Amino acid sequence: MAKCDRCGEQESMPYQCRLCGGTYCSKHRLPENHGCPGLDDWNDPGGVFDSGFDDSVQDTGTNGDGLAARVPVDTGPGGVLAYFRGNVAFTLLALMWVTFLLQYLVAPALGIGAYTQQWFNLFTINTAEPLAVWTWVTSVFSHGGFGHIVLNSIVLYFFGPVVEKRIGSAKLVGLFVIAGALAGLAQVGAALIANPSWWGQQLTTTTGSAVLGASGAIAALLGVLTVLNPNLRIYLYFVIPMPLWLATLLFAGYSIFASTVGGIGAGGVAQFAHLAGLGIGLLYGAKLKREGERAPNRLQFGGGGGRGGPGRRRR
Image (cartoon, rainbow, N blue to C red; front, side):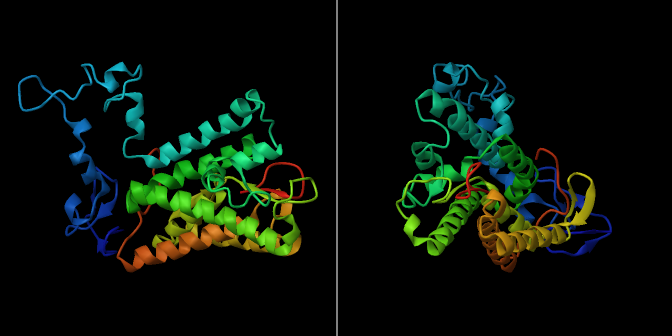
């Protein structure tokens, strides 16, 4: 017996959709009956191939003089970039690593030293320039070190595509960026409420707070999945099996405990940003559930301030 991802009914002979990988009952087995995100690919002109026998299929420039023909990378359905088609989660992952290179290679080469005030004003939401709107976005993709980005990348790699299959690519981008930005603003806002004099002051090892990282955005993804499918089985540290609701509860419990004992930025980690992102995800997941959305029953492969001083947080 298996549960239909759309209506939740038990099905003795379940059907698996080859487009989205979901499991459905006989009533919802057809892609159009379960709102399959894979149906969007049928309207993608890049998915139409010219067999050479049908004049009705026009050459879009992949072999002609168009921009795609001049790009030295195969951008067609079978090329390297095809891996990102319909997989915005992986595009977000790639943007994280591009931003990481800008932080630690390009910026220093241009004379912007890492962890200087100018660097913070480019890549973090901070108490010195909290209204610098561009940092509300760049801070989501920036990270405080190699270990920080690797950990966030692993979680996004596994959970991002699952959420995308359920809510669609556009909504995933919106959730990721907006939740990440709001989580960072919540962390810096809490720091300013506790220390009003930090507003506009240069960051030092004892004054100011700066936030960067995708953890708040990723916590929102976990929140959405927890509401839609709390019993989704995951493996903590790739070893310990547990339902998603328990992992989320442990995550929230640790953040609450750490922020209560050591403050909102305990251990150099933006604990409040984690909680804010998770809260946004739980609220959005509840909205989706009211609308009748359900999450897949299993995961499928593929498919804070900086370091140092007490005022810098990563998430």
